[in-house]
Amino acid sequence: MKTIIICSLLLQIIFLGSFAQSDGDKPEDELYESTPSSPPLVTDDTDTPGTNGYELNIYSENDFAKGSRSFVPTLDANVGLGEKVQLRISKGYTFEKINGEKVYRGVTATSIGLKYRFYDKNGLSLAAYPSFQVNDASRRKDTEGNPIPSDGRSIFIPLLISKEVGKNYTIIGNIGYQKALDRRGQDTVFESLAIGRNLGPDMIIMAEIESTSSPKGRNRETYARVGFVKAIQKKNDRNISVFASVGRQIGSPDENGHYHTIVFIGLHIAGKFKKSQKP
Image (tube, rainbow, N blue to C red; front, side, top):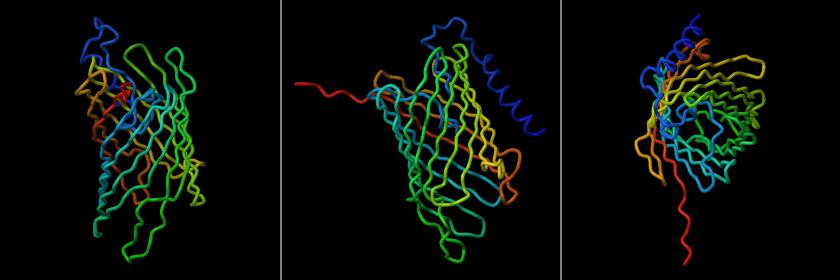
């Protein structure tokens, strides 16, 4: 019942946005894109920076639960390799505090991904986005000083599906499988559904339901999340936006019986590399 109520609220937040601003008389080129994306969501979209394009996301993922909290500043860099292909690399730094323990500090595992949009027609687009997680995160220790096994290397292969609905809405679905290469029995399945709505020329609001579980559907963790992206500078060669979201764990709690609240906040910079001038 709780899950149904939260899903209903998410949809209401999106659709009630239509009352915040009327787009009936606005030309299509004045409307902001309606595509929900990661970050501030977890759901990825099918868009790429395009030829000579780049995107930088500088953000912090903040996790709050009973007895613990963590902050993970992250840099996510993306480069367009043609119109349909995108190369991504991301790296973060973790600050984590668990009651009764010292603050943990350390770098996160490097993630490298290659997105390929292989279908794009009539508002429907499909993309594959395989990524590789490197086993280069800082090594953690328990309270007795013993090393804790890392997550190790993994390969994540998702399918991204995006559908534009009119000028104002975009719906995106993700489904993927993560194969753990160094830890047997740690494979996971990821599923998500997101919707975005533009509010005039400078803002989009969005919501999602995303879930991670074992291949047999066990140990499921589900989050409901709402967020926004707000453009603060729009130029031909560079666009800058701020974004934020808040997500709440629903359904089953974590292995300690706790529910988590996750807050994303950050800055998005996108543009085109300048071509060198020939003499």
